[in-house]
Length: 552
Ligand SMILES: [Zn+2]
Image: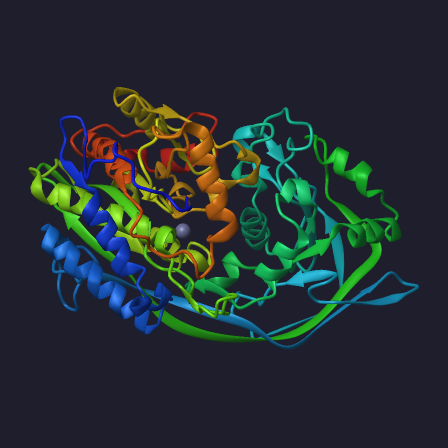
C-alpha cells in the first residue's frame, strides 16, 4: 500500500532468500504487475475486454507454473475442470426518482435521496419498491449473538416493519464489554445488519449514520449506496436482502425518535445493555416508492491447483482479487484508466509467484488452490460467490491466505493483517514470522472493521479460518518513518486513482521476502493433518464447529 519516488537501495538484492524454502524472484513480481497494470488491460474491470486479457494471462501463468485447472467442472465431466469459475453478478440501479415521505400524524415530510437518506437499489429481486406508512422500530444494535448471550430482538416480529438500527456493536462507545471493546466484531458491520434483518423478514433496514462508530462520514455512505449496486446472483435473493436497505442522517433520526415520543441518546444507552428491547416509534411512518433496473453480467474467478499427495480432498487456499476499477472519470491529467498496480496487481503477482514455487516443489499432502477472484471492488463478490458455491468443500478447507495491495518497496521488520481476529492461523503466522525476525503489527484501528472488508472474509463468515496478509511499515531501510510516509502517500495520491501505476523504481524485494513467510505458513498447513480453528469466543467458531464431523 505504498508509493513515493524511491530509489532502489543497495540492500535490495534482486532475489530474497526465504529460510530453507524456495526462492521468490522480485523481477517476476515486477514483470507481472507491469503487465497487469498496463493500459492495455484497461484497469481490469469485470465483464470488459480488460477481464478477457487478465483471465488469459492468469491461465497462461498458472499453466506455466505446473498447476492443474481447478475451476467449474467441464460439461458432462466428473473430474475434468475448466480454469475458471463463472461468477454471475446482478447489477442493480435505481431508475427515476426516489420518493420518500415520513409522516407523524400531524405532518408529512418529503425526504431527499442522498441528503436525508441513502437508499440502495433493491437487490431482493423486485423491480419496484412501494410501501405506504410502514412503522419504524428501533432495534438497538440489531445483534443476535447466542455465544455472547445477547439478543436485541427478544422475539419481536419485524415483518412489514422497518428496523432502525445503530452502526458498530454494543461496546464500541464504552470501549469495554462482550464485543471486543473498541474493536469491531462482525455484529458491528453494516453488512451484518442488512443480513440479519433480511433473515427476520423485515420490510427494511435503516442504519443511523454516526461518523465515529461508522469510521467514515456521510459522503462515503452517500457515494457507496446511491450508485449502481452489485450482488452475486442468488437462488433466493429475498433471504439475503430486505426490500429496503438504507442509511439515515443522525440528526433526522434523532428528530424522528422525538416525534415518536422517544429520546435517541437514552435509547442508545439502553441498547448497550442486554436488557434492551425493540421500541416502536409511535405514530411515525415511512412511505417509499422507487423503480429498480436489474440486469445480469457474468465475470470469472480463475483457479489452479496443486493436487495433494495424500489428502487431495483437503484444501489450502491462497487468494487475491484480479479486478480493479476499469475505465472511469478522468483525473487532472486526463488519465481515465484505473490501472490498479498496487491494488491489486501486487496481490496477483504474489499469487502467481507462490504458484511457481509450489509448482517446483514436491507435491504437498493436501491440495493447494490458487484462486484469483473477481469483483472485489464491487463488494467482495468473486470471493462471496466462491464461498457460496465452493469448488472444493469449505468443511475440508483448512485455511485461506488472502493478499491485497502489498508493498512494492523494500523489506520490512514487521507485517500485519486486515483488521483484528482471534484464530490459530494468525498465531501460526506470527510464530512463523518470528523465525524470520519479523514482528506482528496489529491493525491500529480495529474499530474500522477492516477484517470484514477483504476477500478472506466471505470464507471467515462461513467458518473457514481465513486472513488477509498486509505488508509491514517498519522498513529495514528507513524504519517506521519511511514506511508510514510511503503508506500515507499512497493513500492520499494513488489509492483508487488512475495514478496507481507500475513504476520501474519499485524494487519488490519486500514482497519477495514476505512470500517466504506466506509460503511457509501455507506449506506447513498443506503438509499437516491439523485443523486450525477460531478462538472459543470468536463469532465464527460455532459455524466452523457445526461441520467438525467432516474433519476427523
Ligand atoms: Zn484490493
